[in-house]
Image 1 (spheres, rainbow, N blue to C red):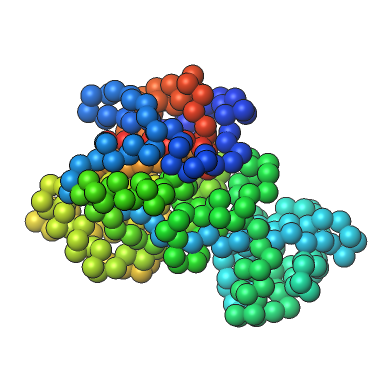
Image 2: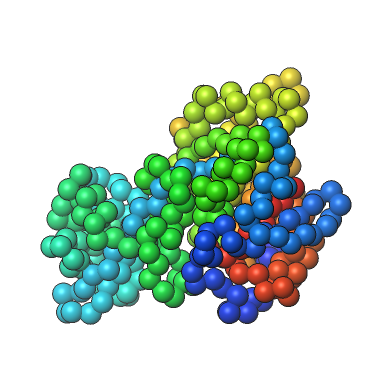
Length: 344
């Protein structure tokens, strides 16, 4: 299959880019896509339980978002902003930096609040290595105190930290929220529990790979960044039994899909998932044959992104194109704080 980047582009009116979450969270709209019958329904997320059945297993990503956006000032007094990506040593982080030309960034100093200081000591194509004046636990404590929610650039307001965090987040490490989970509330979980739906968790720390733009017209040449995930033995055992019994595995978000599909092992013509703590750079696009995930909950994604390629692989590109055009026509809210879909 010859897939071009331009095939995953679409025009979205700017007023449909959600700037804040629905209030309450579960009041967002829910589009239900039936892959077999190619039908589209419309509802609200708080009615999710009506589309699931007893024995279904809902798998969520419990990664917690680091307040990775640090606002500071250059020595000249001008504004500076960085996005923390990955801790490399006790006092050095790989960061996204975009406020001065690349050639001028070595030994460039930035002053943050609370006497936190940083200096760019290495510059790569997309990222920079920044060394801070604090290390280890002291540095992390300062980041947690002064950092801002690392919302994407299409969100023009400064979001509150709790807005950009799932209510079940536990393990700190993501630099972007697993946004399909933002719609869940205690009420929704209670209704699912009453229905007999089982809830399980995996961890994938969202990194640069999830939102790194695809720049190659031939999408197969796009290099995916790797992201750390953890899948424990107990969860694997439960999911494998459910799968063997013919119960549905429903992934909440593309991060869960990638974790489960990466962790596949084929035994006697059946697919199982195996526990591990590892990195995945799996890139899923149309033509991929899904081996473990039966349904998924996901938001409406950015054009030409690896995320829209993944959902196009899952639901079929023509059906996703139709769903997105329907969403635009019916004024669904798009992206991180927007509405979502259940693809069955």
